[in-house]
Each structure stands twice: as C-alpha cells, then as structure tokens.
Length: 367
Image 1: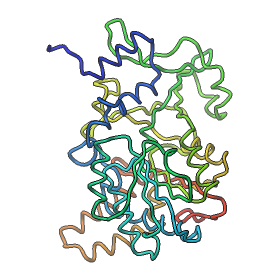
Image 2: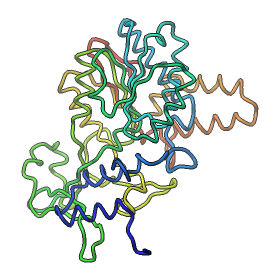
Image 3: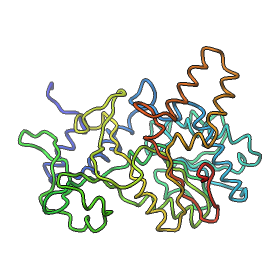
Image 4: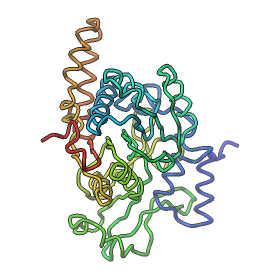
C-alpha cells in the first residue's frame, strides 16, 4: 500500500495510542536500539557513505594517541600482568585497531591486554570482528558494561554518551514538565509536555538551571553508566576516558538532533532511519563518578588534549613519510580534529578522565 507506514513508526504510533505520550528517552531508545528496526541495529552508519564520521575515521592519529595514552596509564597502574581494555560503542572497531597497533611500542602492554567491547548492534559487531581479526587478539563482546568481568581496567568511550537516551523537561510557570512524544489530532508524531509538573526535579538541578526563565528546556540522562564507570575505576583500579560533544557545566537548551547522510534531519521523521543524539552533560557524568570515589580529570577541549598527547609531532612524522599528495590530507585531518568552527571538533568535543585516585594526574590532564 502506498500509504503504509514504516514498521517502527507504525509501532511507535500504536504504543502511544495505547499507553499515552512517550518520554523522549523512550522514543530515542526505540529509534536507535529496537531489535528489528533500530537505527544502530540494522546498518553501518559511519564514514563517507554513511550518515556521520567520528574522529577515529578521520585519522589514524586519533586512535594511536589514545592507545599510547592507555599504555601510559597502564604504566601508572604499575604495569599489571592483566588489564581489561574496554571500549563502549566501538563503531567499526577502527579506534581499537589503531589503539592496539600503537600499543605494540610499549613492551608488555599488548600481552597484558584483554579486549572487551560493549556493542548492542549485530551489524557493527560483525564489522568489529573483521577489523580486529588481523591483530590476533582475543576479544569478547557484551551488551552492557555491567557484563564485563571486574578487575583493573582502562575504559574508552568515544561518541558513546551522546547516543544514550536523553530526557527533556520544559519549564513552565508552575515548574518543570517532562517533554514527551505524542500524537496530534491527525495521528502525526509531535512533541508535547505532560500536564503534571515534576516537583522533584527542581531540587536536583544546579542553581543556574533552577533560575532559568519559563520556556527553557533541560536535558538529563540517568547516572547509571557514569556510576558504573566510576565504581570500576575507583574500586578495582584503572581509568576511563570519555570523549564526546557537549557542555562542561549543566545548562539549559534543546540539543536533541537527528543526522542522516551528513545533514541534519527532523528527529520525529521516519523513526529508525536517522541517528538521534543530544549533547553530553560532562558535569553530570563527573559528579556521578566522583560520588562513588573516582577522581575527575578535566574536562578539556579535544584540541587541547590531543595537542598535549603530541598529535602535531605524530603528524610531522606521518608527513615526512607520506607522498606529497597526502601531506595536505594530514593537515586537513589535524584541523578537523583540533580546530575551531564549523565541522571542526577541537572545542565542541570535550575529554573527561575518570580514575582511581591513587593514580595521580592522568596523562594529558597535567596542569
């Protein structure tokens, strides 16, 4: 039938018609992770042929520097004989591959690594297996961090938190009301707000958010993952690196967005066909991890962090070995990863370190 709805859109409309308005977090989770029709479950979204490009896909330098960072942290930990190297949302496995290649320059680190990948997408897991096969590592896949065995660990999360479901609330004269996905009179999916306010929310917000004017929108995610990361590094030893786009302090603003074919799209249109994300609240992650004993480092702008790790020196080495036609490509990659302005990641993206307090200052976060 010409007017037949896509399966996921039909299911979401049916759920709303039966159960009522759906919190944005529930809608986002369905769009991204529905077992049969979710965006990440059915495709490879990365690269020029996909919908977006992440830092590891832009340049090998990114993953190599993260690998050297991980090796330096391992040494800070006293070079344990066994260390879990965990990546959350590994994409195609590109960053892990570059990390493992760089790890070979640090004696003992490569042999100490046990690779654990947290991935819910069967399509991406298959790509990760192909990417890592040449490295001869024993990798294990998990649907959640809580499934990874406890023990000393280095945890990497690049562009992972932004895809976690986000709640939204809008401030009215009588308080904060949760924003929801609902159906209008014609049965179309639209945004609305619950009539009853959220009386508990205002007590939990930073003062600058509580004082926001009516009409302001506040976004939040549950703290469960940040707490789990903090618990692991603080009580079992190790460190974590969270790299994503977002704001250093909790603030108001509507950052929910959809991307398809490298262009912005309507998050409510064709559920499951676009990537849906929202900016990361680094203050919230840091406070949750710190509350359970982790030491917080940063966050720093990604450009500053990569320069501290030596990206310019690494670029010079690559350019010295590259054919003349490739030198400008390396310069473009550096600008994309560390520069400011449109389509550049240097200041929009932040880097947060979480660690066992006994480790001291993590590499790249020195004053």
